[in-house]
Image 1 (cartoon, rainbow, N blue to C red):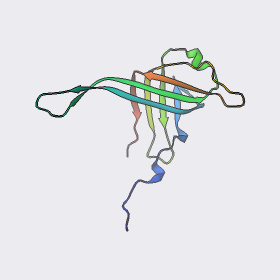
Image 2 (image 1 turned 120 degrees about the vertical axis):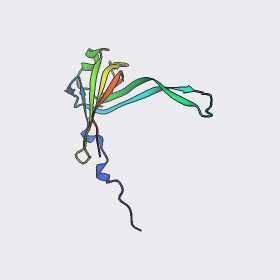
Image 3 (image 1 turned 135 degrees about the horizontal axis):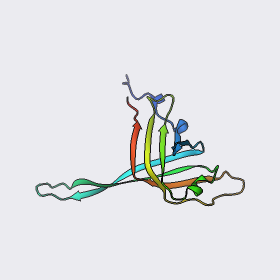
Image 4 (image 1 turned 90 degrees about the horizontal axis):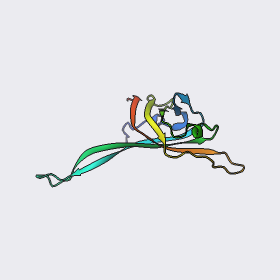
Length: 139
């Protein structure tokens, strides 16, 4: 049985070559970055429709940045706003993607979290107020 042309598995993007920049500085210790936008979807029940209709309300951006602790920068940053640029890259992919997260603010600042004999990691949950897709991956 002949198979059609499917996805080239080498084009699947791995996070191995991803980068995170905070206020322009490459964070080589970061090994996980997640950001998403949720919308406040309003339900509308309109005459003449037997389906609920939806209207987009306010948007909310949130995420988490995780990695190895190498400095006290996040403690010193306190709750001041900063900018993150996420670069998702893979040499075998169709290109790379950069997303700018604007006016980020930590939800919490980790002051201590260690165990003898283990690497110290740092998780920073945050919110952001806007985003910009700087470089899309286009096929």
